[in-house]
Every structure is written in structure tokens, then in C-alpha cells.
Length: 172
Image (cartoon, rainbow, N blue to C red):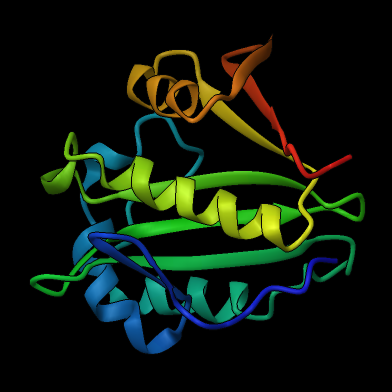
């Protein structure tokens, strides 16, 4: 398991906060849009209570079977303070991280997702993550461009998904 600080991560424009139930109502406003979910195996949340329940579950940071570490952040624009979405990493016992992200479509195409994911990868690499993987629906061209811009390489296609991988330069 990685030892990861609970302190916020700051970028030039963003603040990444470890997930808290108290942020669920604000994040519901960012995550409620159906256009986020066509390529995902879940639907838009019905209300803030649904977001709070998910946040409460992932805040435990360890999967129920204790084989994975769950690391989740909410992403905020710093000026003016605006909820943008969430990013996450599921880390296995070999310190390999599967990543994911959801962003409010009202803020797409401004580089926020790339900035937030890059900051998370840098943070996790410094904590000892060995590699990163993103599973992306073959129709999701925007996510494919995002991970390619972050130096992920397409590893394989599995059904309707592409598996992209990035090896940490710190994995030695």
C-alpha cells in the first residue's frame, strides 16, 4: 500500500481534496450531468444523497476484501471556487494504480482534467506507484487524447475497452 498524504494537492488553477462526504452536495452539481456517463458502467447520480453514499464508501480507502487501496479526490477550480469533478486511483498490492476521472461537462475542453490527473500521477509516483492504467471505452476519443497527452501508451483492446498504460520513471 502507498502512504499518501491527506493534504490537498494544488496546481496553478486547481485544488485536489481527498474525498469527504461534506463535499457531496457541491460535487453532485458537477457529477449529475448524463453526458458524463455514456461510456461508463454507471448512471448519473439521482441526488446528492447518492453521491454522499459513494463518497462514504470510498473514504474507507481500503476495499472490503482488503486487496486494494482506494484513493479519491474531488477537484475544484480555485478562483472562483467551483466544483469540477472527481479523480481516483485504485492501487493493488504491487503499487500499480488503475485511474479514473469524471468532470462536469460545463467545464470540458479547458485542460482541467489533464491538469488534475497529471497532478495525481505525480503525487502517486512520489509515493511509490509503479505504473498507471486507464481503461477507456473505444468510443471515448476525449479520454484517449487525455491519457495520450500524459504519455500513456495503448497496450491492448479488450472488447469495447482500450487499456492504456504508463510506467512510472521511479519504478526502478
